Image 1: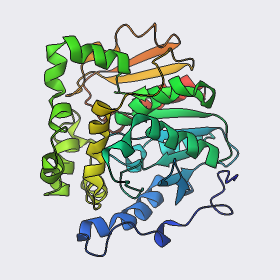
Image 2 (image 1 turned 90 degrees about the vertical axis):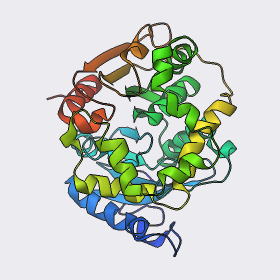
Image 3 (image 1 turned 135 degrees about the vertical axis):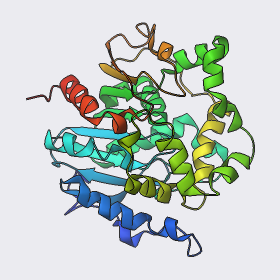
Image 4 (image 1 turned 180 degrees about the vertical axis):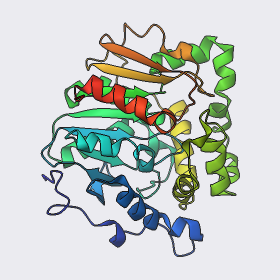
Length: 331
């Protein structure tokens, strides 16, 4: 089915016809759709919220930019949603890209299948491949952050024919992360939450007591550039966190990563790749960017000093400039 990027003529069920929060959800969760519509207006470019098929799930997506432009897929991380790309979507759309920004499975308004096995990496990459195919495309530029980066690395390995170019932000290549967790005590300490999230029920229970408090904890209090998140930003993210079962589903990504190996072996990435790395990431050390040449032969690395993990939020102008230059869209 060729949906193209024409959300005026060919689209899945519109947002306001597809409820996901139960009638008993807290008021913040019920406002998620309102926040989406307000956010679309704030983008400053024509955009639409709709649903597209992933690999056995329905995924909420935001579409922007010309329908006949080259496709760019933006993948968020934990505990974010499509909104984390609000400062990149307009720039890419204005550069001529058809921009597809999903809530990945388990997040915000997308489906949240039950069970840890539903969040295996091969299913996560399968979702992105399905979205590309749903738009009638064979290839896309993949732009990703955090857990979205983990999906992007794997997608580029397993489906090289589908990845035109790759831009990854503060997400370690899987080989680099595995080596660091095996031998680097400094990185192990930074990554304590990986092990905490293996506990049953407790992590999601703690993080859903106050979705707004959780949003402040993750985004505002760990940012180096503290003005990166407005009160509206935090409330919008909190509404996504407040969706019934969303936090459990998000944490299942970590649990599945410990339990299920990818079906394919790790191999070098063929696509030209830009790695953007904020140097003051509280969770991921700069050393994770070293020695990747064997696995990513066509790699460029750009470091952003005095910046925390949320690099596309904290340093949007620099990120956008580097991204467009790499993609050949400057000037």
